[in-house]
Amino acid sequence: MPKNYTYDDAGVNRKQRVESKKQLSILQETYKQSFFGPVLKLPYGNIFPIGQDQYLDLVIEGVGTKILIAQLTKKYDTIGIDAVAMAVNDVIRSGAKPLAIADNIHAQESNPDLVKNWLTGVAEGAIESGCPVTGGEIGDVAEIIKGINQNTGFDMVITSIGTVNKKDLITGENIKPGDPIIGLASSGLHSNGITLARKILFKQWGGKFEPTDIPEDLNREIGLEALEPTKIYVKPLLKLVSKIKIKAAVHITGDAYTKFNNLTHASPGIGFRFDHFHPQPIFALMQKTATELGYSISDEEMFKTFNMGWGFGIVVDKTDFDQAMSILDYTGVEADVIGEITDKQTVEVIYNGKRMILT
Image 1 (cartoon, one colour):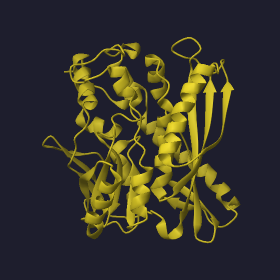
Image 2 (cartoon, rainbow, N blue to C red; image 1 turned 120 degrees about the horizontal axis):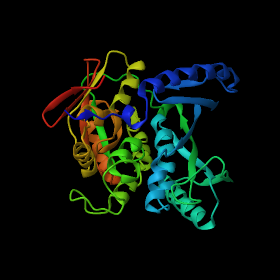
Image 3 (cartoon, rainbow, N blue to C red; image 1 turned 90 degrees about the vertical axis):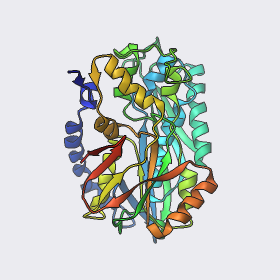
Image 4 (spheres, rainbow, N blue to C red; image 1 turned 180 degrees about the vertical axis):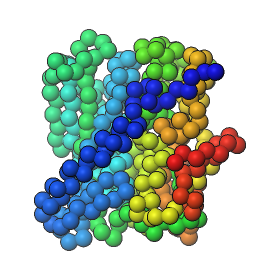
């Protein structure tokens, strides 16, 4: 019987992360310092007022261990897109328009060629997001950061700030059974679950492939497939915000489809059923490769860890569904209905004829 391989086995302890997040309550005492009024808690973060009926959404994000794949492949000009995407895709969950970006890169060595490649990606992501990069810092910290290859170690963090008017806020409230869930297509792995993916796919971390191998299930090198940049959803989401009322916006990242459960804090008594998936081949390759290595990654684990083909979820009233799909089609983003809101108070996934309850 093959061992069931999980995110915990890869080195990410889910239960400990949940306990650690409880410590965020320490910061609530600082909310009293908000100058223009109370901090507003949303399903996926907090925003703060800057005047009458206007809020700022401030997000700081990184790309995690995907930077190790950039080092492994020696390709550094796209990882900045991922960093920007992780930040701006979080900002828009509140309905906010990203206004500016700042980067912070800690490097083993600030080699000019590497810096050029890092910032090339940051700039590309910022242009796609429609906002400037107004500041940043690169620090040489060789005693802290080590790379796979000599002097190539780095970590990249992006801050983005956006503004939203009260009338355009996406709060997660008033969601009801029957409301459709619209998915916006991902480009593949994005920047989450990479620790698990690395340890199954790459020999560097105990997996099967060299980064230049082309598995029969793919049409390019596995390193490049895993490094495919995270999609940026700013333009289609903001176009929707300007036309219809969005009830919820979910960036499908860490914890994947279990993240939708956060919406129950704003709309108690609801549940979620997902039944439409066309994941990119790399997800099936991961499960297949795990089996070849003597492990088993369950479908449940995949849907708790990876986006499985949809990088962003949107909940609208069913009366707005047709208009929402028309707007999304106009923006050019690949979108489809992936499920609906239920009254079962669970996160249910139906995939390949199998019914799974994630929470």
